[in-house]
Image (cartoon, rainbow, N blue to C red; front, side):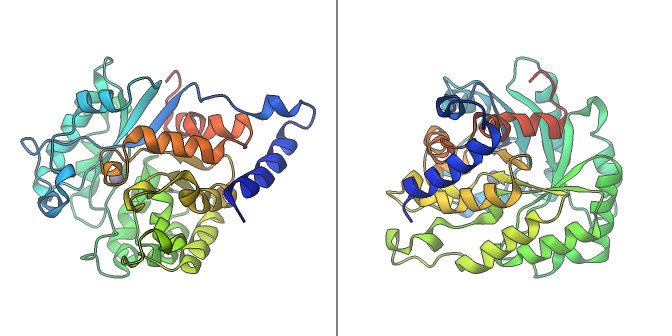
Length: 327
Ligand SMILES: [Zn+2]
């Protein structure tokens, strides 16, 4: 089914449900008034060390600070939640101090943060607690999608204990998993029912899995079915939210909005309008496109959904989830 036909059916169905008494034109959203980017990275190798960056593509090995972000988002009404950048353990504290300082500065676009941390490490609770003053830190992430992470790592007792503790503190945990490990995410969310999980990057869906014709020589990261099932199962868990982000970084050259639509629509349809948030994943998105191209593509993909659903995706859900009233 083509993109236009699919979105037309989905869009008209959801719009009709939400706005049955309104003329169709009312349900067609204009450009979103406000955006909360729930996945903004900032980095400077002079400040912190990111070992993974040393072998990353050249475009990522530059300095990406607030000034560069402001330039990349010029013209948008945007505020952000900083996302940790997988610095070396010794620099985790320094990274957290930096970003909390940024959040305190009212002139900055960054209003809240998800800091890096290792839930299984002995000093985890003490470390996180030392950054909670002011209420800017909303959650923690430890990426689990790297090749070096052993299978089942996130289900070990010590890890689970740390993630449960986050829930007790009202903090969330960001799940960044290999698509083949989404089932582990389900198990972890069951073991920690009082912790809110945010699934990063549409569960790391790979557009090449859906459109192998765009990059015939590249092997997609996963099979379509395992990802589809993982998303559907995670969506059944009430304590999991899906972040619509990240997929652009894996999109092959020449991609268009329609090549991302299966991933986005499966996430939106599975999680529903109240458990999805937008993220840019800047500057990692630059591997596939400038931030503005991702925003434009996502606007096109969701254009036929109701204005209310769109506003929730772009900002409303994040505002509520992170307690960012007035932003
Ligand atoms: Zn990221």
